[in-house]
Length: 113
Image (cartoon, rainbow, N blue to C red; front, side):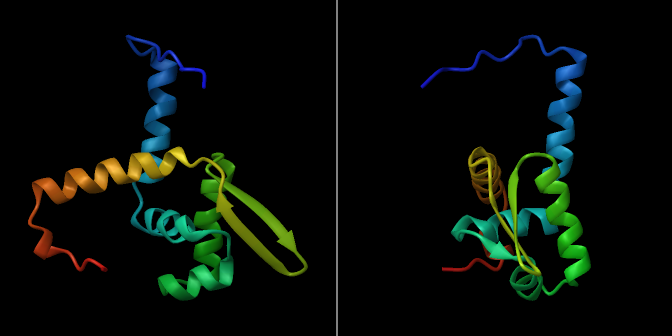
């Protein structure tokens, strides 16, 4: 596996791109969608139902993630399926979630077993 050398110090352009990615991941609905897709490909309708959101809102959030290259999008008839395209997103989310749990009272969150 080839190791990527990150620019240091960050150039303004690269820092903007990284900040854009963090803004994309900074939305609770999008984070929940990514978490639901951890288990595999899902339809917009099933994701909307699980989130308790409209299909229109769910589709909009999924489109933002897909346009950024984080998700794959596949059409089959009238249905649109989404799946994770960049598994590195789980490493980012897992690191931040672990940090949150270390610094806050875990009993304040409704955790699933």
